[in-house]
Image (cartoon, rainbow, N blue to C red):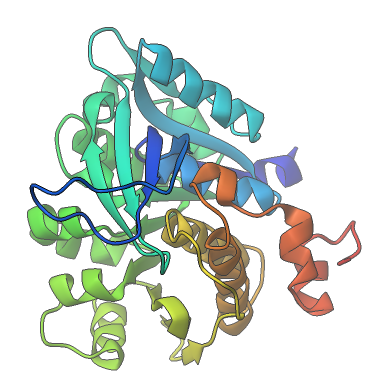
Length: 326
């Protein structure tokens, strides 16, 4: 039972249905923009992170809220189909399920048009403390810090995690840095892991280089920090003084949706399961890069077999000791 409990990971964040539009160029105002392809599926930071850790061997749960509508039914069906436990997902009687329109240009870069809907109304009073107490990791998508009551639910979940010595990983997003920067700064000493991309870094710590920011964040009490840098891989730091830049595998990116969520979940899982920062960064780079090779969010996250095939035997055997790395 103890080994089983160690594999439980809870992700708290948005649960959406994504509608992706592949365009030859970014839309211009008042233009009539052609779409070359459309993709729709499950998404949202909470669901994406839960699916990613599930691929790596976790028993994933997601905490969030969907509407009592067709989109909500689809999101829950998608979660279950990808192995995510949804017993902690709340059903809102009136608010619609969150929807995200995603514009993807030919180089794979994406822009979001987000309707947060029922996500905002995730209610702290219906949290399941026993779930968090049984979890090894609490993964928090920073969209959950934007608005109450979801923000209060996230903060309460983090308080429970701290009491139970459950490790907390926070993945930033630009809207949260813009709206809740002071709150994020106050939370830093409580975080086991903080992840962000370079745009989020610039918003959180204006004027600081990546190296300066890593030192600042570790100095603020965060135990581990990872900066996602796209084609340059990542820069990571830990409280033991390690600082590394790690390059990603070479892939052809078609859609970077969910890459950051997948990276953050994988980095957290690697560290939690005994990989060092270099090995964890390698794992996270592989998971993020492979996610970029196909369209969508949940559906784009690679399988365990795909991930293992891109890792060294040393890393694969640590993560999946009962399987071969092939």
